[in-house]
Amino acid sequence: MVTTFLMGSSFTVGKIGLTYVSPLLLVGLRFTIAGVLMAIIVRKKPLPANISDWGRVFTIGLMQTAGVMGAIFLSLRTITAGESSILTFTNPLLVVLMGTVFLRIRYRLLQWIGAGVGFLGVFITLGFHLQLTTGTLLGLGAAVSWSIGTILIKKWGSLFNVWVLTAYQMLFGGLILLVMSLTMENPRLTINMASVSIILWLAIMASIVQFAIWFYLLNQGDPGKTSAFLFLAPFFGVLSGWMMGEVVEWYVYAGGAFIFTGIFLVNWNFAKRKEISLP
Image 1: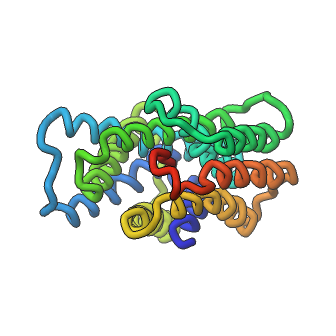
Image 2: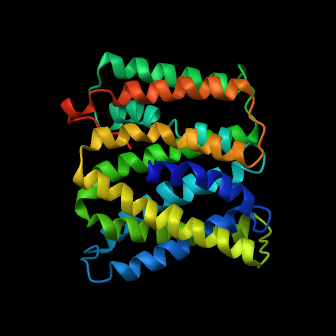
């Protein structure tokens, strides 16, 4: 509950942060600070052994952090935090498709039904039409990038200490986002108590603490039961946006309900099917 709350509420906190900081600079600072702090914490753990392994960590950071978070925070300029979170957290449904194509994982019929229900939910969330705006495309792009990152972690994750991988993929992703900020936007930073508090919250609570709890749960408990809680993240995204005064149309709630149902079906009975891996 805590980690999915931090995942979901970070959309709303991030949207508030856009008042003081330009999107790519905000998310770049968030993950660079988080990556540096976590790299210090894991400094005594085994690092990647060679250039190829460092390249793999860099690629994961490019997709899992830079791609996902860059798309999310750019989407928040034109769509609500609730809509962005719902679109982003369709990623478990995309993993079903990518896992079949790239990892040759065999999924059960119930999980394919779940994927279909989830994509129907995306259609409803977009207002029953296929006219995609820049914000919705970016939200879906975040889901695609996260799914690719999940596939890469599935293939390469066993090569690294999980805490070292987490630290350096965040650091590399944050640095990439800072470069993107300098080249793709006019960086803007207003330094005051509010902006500093938001950046620190996103870096520490919504990044380091969130990842620490998440990986602890994956290591200590059943990964399937843990992954099933991901459907709560977009709910918290919508709820926190509503608490901050965002107007959420009824079809966003309806689409979200379909997406939650789809994710639940994809994760159902996971423990008995160890070959299936979802984020």
